[in-house]
Image (cartoon, rainbow, N blue to C red):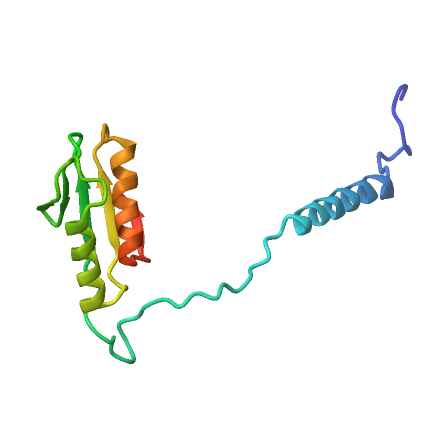
Length: 139
């Protein structure tokens, strides 16, 4: 027969070259996937759990300080000081009283209005710092 390759009965035999190619492709695949393996590391985080020892007390209650666009500062819905007061003695005294009574574990959350003046926010931050607030965040 013209154009046919191999022996006359059609048996080509075992071809090793394609098998070596397949083995090399598999080897490359496993080498590439082993390099991208994620190594897990231990994080030293203490997660709270409901089992085991009881907690020392109730969870901390946040102190929320709102700042309006007009500069009115209110803590837990009670207005403190006038908008023109820079030192804010009433707010500072109230924050200091909370720290003395409950400790500094209660978080203080400052929630300024979108168009509140930055100057007023700085006044509140200064009052909180002078009262000794350590757990402070913005919302």
